[in-house]
Amino acid sequence: MSTTEAEAQTKRWRDLKKRAISAAVLGPGALLCIWLGALPWTALMAVAIAGLVWEWVHLCGLRNRALPGAAVPAAVFVACALAVFGMTVPALVLLALGFVATWAGAGWLRRRDGRPAPAGWLAFGVLYIGIAGISLIELRHDNEAGRDNVLFLIAVVWASDIGAYMFGRMLGGPKLAPSISPGKTWSGAIGGLVCTMVIGALVAGWTTPYPDDMGKAAVIAALLGVATQAGDLFESAFKRRFGVKDSSALIPGHGGLLDRLDGLLAAAPVAALLAFGVGYGVVLWR
Image: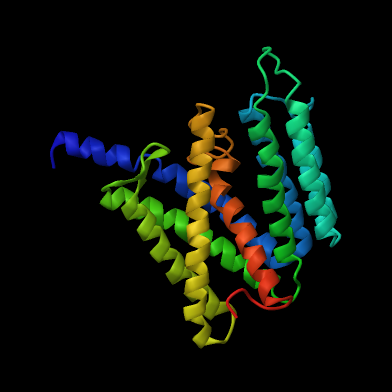
């Protein structure tokens, strides 16, 4: 291997160590909260949503403590609180009202530097983070199947992220969406999708004693995997719009919470809709 090739290989994997350390620190805590029940999971979601909202408003060039930026955390937190008490419909209505109010208010309020606020992007954060937060809360609050469904969702999202990273770095090839995210490749997207299907089937086989359901689980996992990758691309487009590489520097090797949870934010509402379709107390793949 030439010196140039060796340098390219080193550059390709230079963030792997930081990613591995971050995953080793954060992953067990998330799994423990899922396993312990709805209350610890809700507490974790409160912390995560606070970080996500802070990053979103910050990327829009605004502050969470002053309008119009403060409208985003206010709407999201009240809506999620309603969801905790089982009032999902009022929570969604509140998000819709918060979206309209934030967009209208940001249209005439200025940023600190005098420039107009990005009203549409700011208001979209109410829906984007709020709906995902409500979905994650509702999924775990199903005491009969909540643990298995959230474990399945998290495992699929992680498999998509890890598979896309590993296959993309190893195989390279044509870019998936070079104008949005130059680093993503078709090999990574396909590899990530295959990993989601394998892991989804294995998790289903482990959590429920129904081997015949593993095929269904692989299909559901593929659907969630597509949503995960779409969320990843959307977050890349969002960051490109505001000219930043990472949403923040909270997580070494991953950037911020939006960088780490972008796929989950998109996949969670899909999983919640599936859970609504199959009914209370039923796993997503039944």
